[in-house]
Picture 1: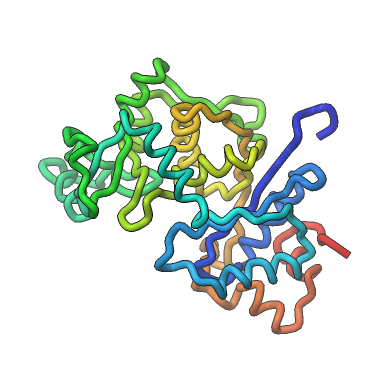
Picture 2 (picture 1 turned 30 degrees about the vertical axis):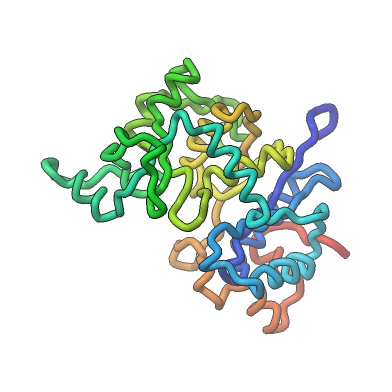
Length: 288
């Protein structure tokens, strides 16, 4: 982008299965939007129970076969637990331990109201059952949640904002404090057995890697509000966003890793060339 800030992007898959056509599209969009040499690869492997080394190896092999090149070294989230612990410590004054399971949350939300239960980007909106508990009361099986109301009070602002260069590029997206509380609620900062969460890790890592443009699927649009809030609390800049379309099957369903018929590896082994993959997802070929 001549005359403007450097556009540094990243593709951040989780090694929990083989990459599919949707991943190829997401990686291609990120690479296409980056300035020369500013496309990064990050392995999001905080879920140690589901992440496998053979899937991580397949990520490198498939992306290389597609002609994509990225800066070295590759960041791996499993190597960055100290950074996440530091971020949790910085958020401690707005945090509390929570012992509630999904069934507890559902039960709390079900009575006495009727009808559909309120849900946000992470599922049912937490009703605040454990909000009174001090962080010193945390048990090994607790998750750590962010007290969103206290966080907004500390920031001294009543709304969040960010820009997206694809979805209404000439406008600023806005969310008020009340809308965040009603539509998202107290988010999880650290999950059981992980020591962090997707939301916390991605915010810390994007800042550490100097990401200036976050490209990702439109299904993560609502999660962006969580990330903007965490960026504000941790003193990080808010990058520009680029929420792109999703690759879907003939029935309009978003592709998933369990659908091996659309895995890059499967299509490749059937005789396809990289240009065929790029043609299937509607992007120009990469590499020679």
